[in-house]
Length: 188
Image (cartoon, rainbow, N blue to C red; front, side, top):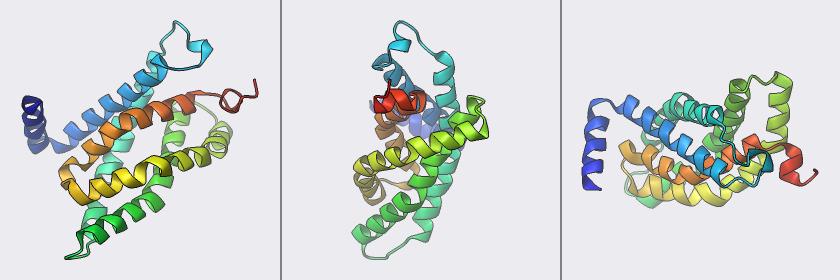
């Protein structure tokens, strides 16, 4: 494992943006692979949707990673409470969950809708039916993760920590994004 960590650190030192974008794309795709592999959706039985995985990779590497890198840098430089690291981490986590989480989740559904060539009305409907449920589940997972992330992890590794936890979070997002409202809520 240390060889992988050394390799990652070397790439992070020489090409940080590219390294984080590619890593994020790969791990978003991994989440989708998990979602499709273990999906209860009978329409997927025996089939694999490569385009869906490509959409997740694209969103992770081209949309999410660049935004997240800037967000973590901004939060880390603007929310500073000298001599009180726990209070600082708590403040960063609170801002992250009140600002980034709602915007990030909306951005995910917007991105997926655009990549699926949905109409603006379809995208609006997706946001109305899925965003609040996703936010509730977000608050069950991410506040604790982000508190630890902001408290203990150096800035250059924060996106990687999020990416690893996100493997399963992205599996959930991929599953809920791909599911119709009827399937999710048991109407069919």
